[in-house]
Image (spheres, rainbow, N blue to C red):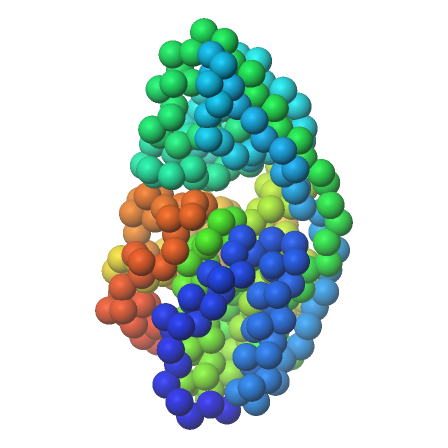
Length: 319
């Protein structure tokens, strides 16, 4: 077990270097996490599972013959020939999941892939949305390939009868420093600097949280893969903690079933939802960089990360 102090900033920067953490880059991230655990003599187990992920091969948006910077955010290919449906991506995708659209995040200055849709969809920045709205002629095209991928959950600690099970996903859309290299770093710091907590705890570094073809809830497949194999220990454990997006603001601990449905969308959540708590921070502030290349780690502040760490360890040790 390591004796040196864990450098969370260096660790997060390493995860960001693999971004976007999808497909081969997700695999590189998992390999790095495994090698990091081995270097520090931490025992782990691997759960592999199959998934399918959208790979955007081509995206184009023309507004009155002017090409607009954009990115695809859909699970299917197709064309968009009007600006009739322009959506704020702060609107839940569940409301318009099957509607072809052009979307933008009004709180983010970059291209922010907040939501994915089961219809052709293209995302632009808030600076460019006015050009799209004013255009008399629109032509957009997105080409998406549905690709199979073998993801993995990395399990550390007590896999037989844990009192607490904690999750943090390591895949990302775009750079993903806050979302969720920060959560992975918090779990890693905890198990390295407080190794005694592993006696009664299980840590799950989850793959494939961001995107899958599961419908209507396309995120959280890695959590559901764990649920499918290990529901018995989920059902028996006293506490389930989801660590997602910390360090950008004072820590917030949320115990609310409605929020749990977003943060931990497993199939049997209604049976065990009362045990779920989410360790997070200011989600409104997060929207300024969410699912964009602006989430590069600059908004993560040491005092807030440390605050989240102490709050998490206290949660783990409280029976």
